[in-house]
Amino acid sequence: MRIGELARLTETSPRLLRYYEKQGLILPSREANGYRDYDDSQVDRVLQIRGLLDAGLPTRIIKQVLPCLDAPRRIHFADATPEILDTLESETERMTRRIHCLTRNRDAILEYLSVVRELA
Amino acid sequence: MRIGELARLTETSPRLLRYYEKQGLILPSREANGYRDYDDSQVDRVLQIRGLLDAGLPTRIIKQVLPCLDAPRRIHFADATPEILDTLESETERMTRRIHCLTRNRDAILEYLSVVRELA
DNA sequence: TCTATCGTTGACATGGATGTCAAGGTCCAG
DNA sequence: CTGGACCTTGACATCCATGTCAACGATAGA
Image 1 (tube, each protein chain N blue to C red):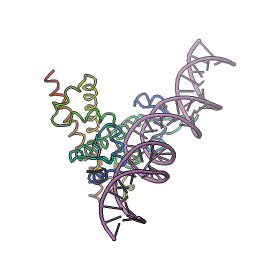
Image 2 (cartoon, rainbow over the protein chains, first blue to last red; image 1 turned 135 degrees about the horizontal axis):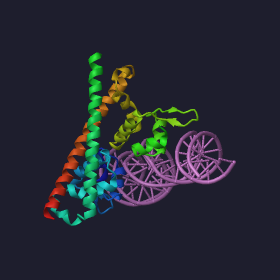
Image 3 (cartoon, rainbow over the protein chains, first blue to last red; image 1 turned 120 degrees about the vertical axis):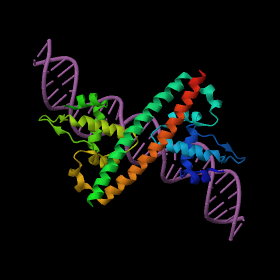
Image 4 (tube, protein in one colour; image 1 turned 90 degrees about the vertical axis):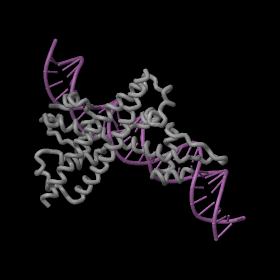
C-alpha cells in the first residue's frame, strides 16, 4: 500500500511516516515510480511506534526496542550487544516507574471524579 | 527553602522550577529580598509534577490535574466546572491507554531480555 | 488533454521542555 | 570591604515531534 493509505489506517500523517522512516523505524520498499510501498505488517509496526511515542519513549530508544518486539525474536539475537541490553533494562525500569506514577495519579483523579459526582 | 535547595532535593534545575512556576504549577512565596521561598510541601509537589511530565502529560493538563490530587480535596470542588470534569475524565482514559501500552511493551522487552539471558 | 489527487524531496515554522548566558542584586565569610 | 556563591529576570539556543508549504513528478478519470 502507499503512504496515504497507511496514514489513514494508522491515523497519522504522511509527513510523520516519512519522519519515522528517516529515524530508521520503518523501511518501506519503493514502487518503480519511487512511491513508498508498505506491506500490511507495517500497520501494526506504525501503531506500535505511535503507542511507544505516546508512552513517552523517544524515537532513538524505540529504534533499539523495536527489533526485540519483532517475531520471531531469535533473528535479532545477533544485535544484542551488552550496551543495548543495558539500555533495554534501564528503559524497562523507567517504564515501570511511569506505569506506577500514571496508575497512582489516574486512580487519584478517578476517585476525585467519583466523589465530585456523588455530590452532584 | 530557596530555589537551589529545592532543585537539589528534587533533582531538577532552578531553571525548571521557574518554568513550572510560569506555567502555574507552583506558587512560592517571596522573601523580603525577592528570593523565592518554598515550603516543605513543595518538594512532593515538584516530584509529582516531574512524574507526570515523565509520564507524558503536558504542563497544561498537569495544571488541571494537580488541584484534584491535593488534600483535602473538598477545597477544590468550586473549581470543578463541567468542562474540567470532562477533561479529567478523558485524560484518565488516555492515561489508562498509556498504562496498557507501556505495560505491554515493557513486558515484551522483559521477556526478550530473559530469553536472551537464558542463552548466555 | 486537462485537472484533481496523490506522491516525491526539501525548507521553514512551531510548541514544549530544557539549557545557557548576561547583567545585575543579595549575602556571608574572610 | 571584597570575593564567591546564590538569587533575580530576560533573551537566546536546542532537541524533538509535528505542521505547512513549495516545486515538481505520477496517475487516473472527465
